[in-house]
Length: 104
Image (cartoon, rainbow, N blue to C red; front, side, top):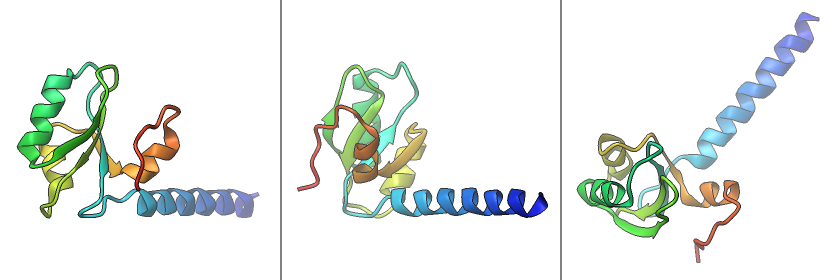
């Protein structure tokens, strides 16, 4: 029984690790920034501007924004500006039912 538990724990850790590697933001590529629920579009756009990025997609009903920053450390700057999570936009698009952003 311990072997099964160990195997399940290893499989879970591997899956989480693979997800983190796939979702890791890459400099020069669009990222999805998740802000706290209830954040206004104005507050989000100000936070992105303070972080040095430009908006690619902003939905007034969602606390998620697709943005692009050219400088190194852009993801860290988004965290400092109030984002709860910053991931690669292509991965975030897979999780969204109404994804309108295209990586082309």
